[in-house]
Image (cartoon, rainbow, N blue to C red; front, side, top):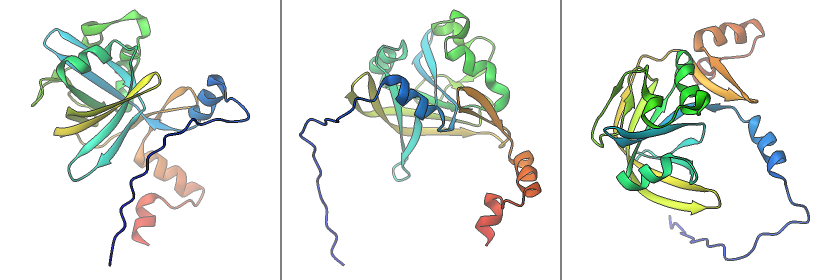
Length: 200
């Protein structure tokens, strides 16, 4: 069977009869629930990070992921300088970490790391001990668009913990997802769980 490979390039200005405001777009994206993570960058005392919901896997072979980084953030210069970053996927009991790295309380740089335990792996970037998963990445490619950069990371190491309640962000607030508790709720309203669907 022959496969067809198409290279698609867009070299045109995209226009619309109506401009969508940033407020409208932000409102639409708020209803998209997302896992909460912290991106960490830097080495030694030259470290910082930020809370994100913009992490996604790109490829399994080789293991790569994508994260969107605001180029006005304090993390951007360190990401460029060291060419590495950590993705720390938070559990519900790490809400305080999410808030510190979002800038709550005015904490900056290394101050955001206080109160939690951190480890390092191949790249030397701090990784959060006890997070649902901590992923150590080298920067493979950066695509700059508008206010942000799409950063493709090649995974160098992964640390996982026993799955427990996950932290998500939905409609402007943090929400805990507990698999056991949520399965019980689904059973009460006769909605099949994902495990039950896989077994069908």
